Length: 75
Image 1 (cartoon, rainbow, N blue to C red):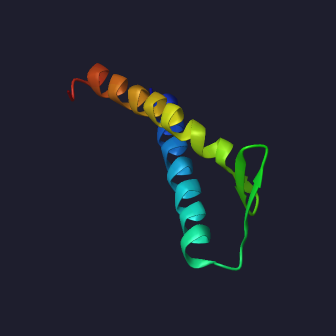
Image 2: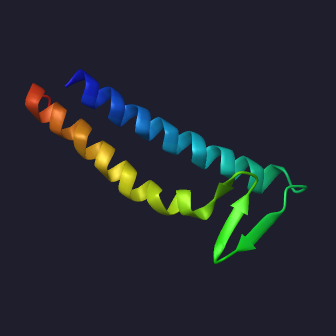
Image 3: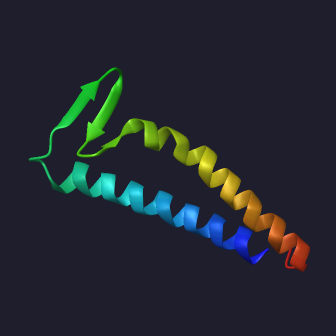
């Protein structure tokens, strides 16, 4: 359970870090150009494909954490 919880929380932290990094680039670094290629938007080394997967990854990680809470009797 510890391994599953750690992996899930690490995944959520990674999603938040990536989102924050992209937001900072988009909002506060106007010198960085948003490049559109093949229906994808790229900011520096990140593209919109990563963002498309955030919801699925977050739901899966949250599901793992909730499952562990249930096993521990916390919910």
